[in-house]
Image: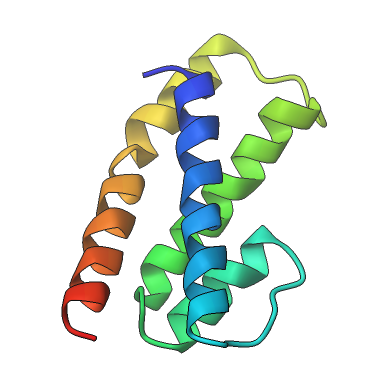
Length: 100
């Protein structure tokens, strides 16, 4: 899994969050990180997962906007340690939708 895949997956995750927020008429997020807080506060995902996804969003921003120099080893380690967060997000959203 490379950084492009993680960037795409994290973007897809917060787009899904935006759709849920809109469809459920929840408060409007200021940015992608606050979207995670909103869906967590509304019991769509748990707080720990929201924090992890916010970190993933920050990492994605570092890569995309080149705010900092990241070497390939750091990038790979971060991806390896956090790739399951997207799968957990999908599962929690799926459970929410099925039980709504």
